[in-house]
Amino acid sequence: MRREQVFSGWGEPGAGPSISSHAVDFLRDELGIDGSVVSSAVALEDVRLGERGLDITPFAAIVGEEAVRTDREARVLRCRGKSYLDLLAQRAGDCEAAPDAVVAPADHHQVVAVLQHCAESGVAVVPFGGGTSVVGGLEPLRGRFEHAISLDLARLDRVVAVDERSLTAVVEPGLRLPEADRALAARRLTLGHVPQSYEWASVGGCVATRSAGQISTGRGRIDSNVVAVRCATPAGELATLDAPGSAAGPALRHLVAGSEGVLGVITQVSLRVHPLPAAQRFEGWLVPDFETGCEVVRRLAQAGAAPDVPRLSDEEETRYSLAFAGLGSLPRRALAGRCLLICGWEGTEDSIKRRRREASRALRRSGAWPATQRAGREWVRSRFAGPYLRDALMDRGVLVETLETATSWSNLAALHDAVSAALHASPRLIAGCHVSHLYPTGASLYYTVFARAGEEPAAQWRSLKTAATDAIVAAGGTLTHHHAIGRDHAPWLADEDGPLGVEILRAVKDRCDPAGIMNPGKLLPAMT
Ligand SMILES: Cc1cc2nc3c(=O)[nH]c(=O)nc-3n(C[C@H](O)[C@H](O)[C@H](O)COP(=O)(O)OP(=O)(O)OC[C@H]3O[C@@H](n4cnc5c(N)ncnc54)[C@H](O)[C@@H]3O)c2cc1C
Image 1 (tube, rainbow, N blue to C red):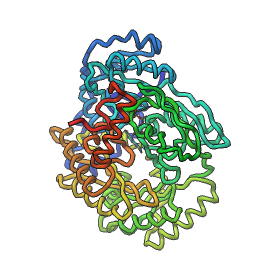
Image 2 (cartoon, rainbow, N blue to C red):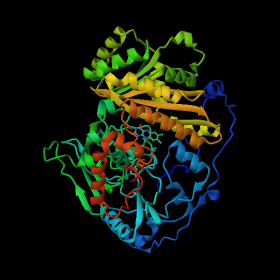
Image 3 (cartoon, rainbow, N blue to C red):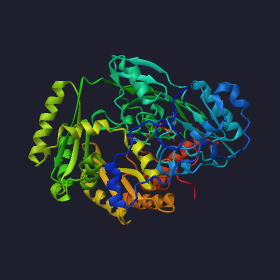
Image 4 (tube, rainbow, N blue to C red):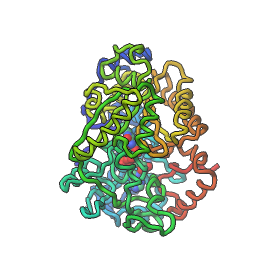
């Protein structure tokens, strides 16, 4: 049996760290929560499920009876992703719209046959990789159809080929990231792709959403490591050549990467892989203020000397990160606007030494000084803890969610101010931000928001998210640097791509998926 997460939260039951008393005390003071558990998820047997009577016989004939599931657990687990809105609905047991069945093909040909049957009989298809979407990408919307299936890619989990000489690997999409890394580690290689959702996200889901991991500054985002793709669409196969570079017209692999299941299903992907690093080093610095920190990481990125993992917190994020780590007694006055910068380095001992020396010089010149060794170690230890703590905070009546964007270096400060102001228009709210994925031309901004959940927490978050997204669009940031569009950002897509851009995407979808069965309601805005 493949490992599964709990339907109403993150990870397997009982896994992950528990919330520290420092964090609860801090949020009690800041948000006015009382710190006790005030809400919990309904039991699986109390979840409300809709029944629509889909005939599953044709699916069983294609993939085998045991690979078609209609039981409560399978349908509830495939009902949504892991955003705050998803978890609110799952915890409340609202799965009326759950997929009618979960169908798990074993190979590309079975995927093609399932899509053909769905196109002929009018069944919506929601591809399911690791289930960690945070933008409503897995919502089983049916479009104009009565039925929807979740197309679970878990059985497409093979490493098809590894070319150690070219440093590429061909893998199937359902492989989870740790599984892919385990297989590659036997050859001293790694994907080098570590999003915070690493434990559960799949390779195919990451490609379908153009994900960026914590090491993206050093290793590149996943789409920049995609060499070739194979995609099964209802209209046929779209496969691109595995070549290191090509001028044969626009790169079609980039049309498939980021297509979020609306064109078809990625059934194979060839990725650039990286030598397993011989050494790693993580450390913390305190920079005089956020602006100075941005300047120093900009210069490092442009000089090719940036850490592989850079993470510069603004003042607010610095304050709560220290408080969560038990250093909340450090008075604001002592911090005086200083901001925490985590630097992570990977490679050989020598290369790390050389790059650290250059970065340390630039940091000291800017007035920064090294924080304790503990800061870097603490960040590594807790790099996957956030989503487990979110469950504990939701139990305690805290609204907690993240959002992200990116822009040029010249526009970074203005965008940061605009988004912070939009969020802080709501009273008694914490909205800390960090700069984390660096490019020579700009960087991403990633916000974490905490507030006391009101009577209508879903509406409360939607209103905050709308305000933040409107501010992002007005200030010239991207709708999303790495979470993708899904259902949640689709209404704003024309603001980023323009009306013609959206029409072009719609035309491609119509050609690949004439019946419109593929992941309805995602990526493309609703027709008006
Ligand atoms: C706690 C948490 C932390 C996160 N941290 C990060 C982060 O650091 N960086 C980051 O980039 N993202 C992050 N995310 C978002 C999420 O993990 C990414 O979007 C990830 O790429 C999704 O992968 P998945 O396998 O879970 O895909 P899923 O959630 O299963 O699917 C995502 C979308 O892709 C489609 N899809 C999935 N597989 C395929 C396929 N083979 N072919 C076609 N379409 C497909 C689905 O239909 C859906 O629309 C985080 C999410 C959570 C919950």
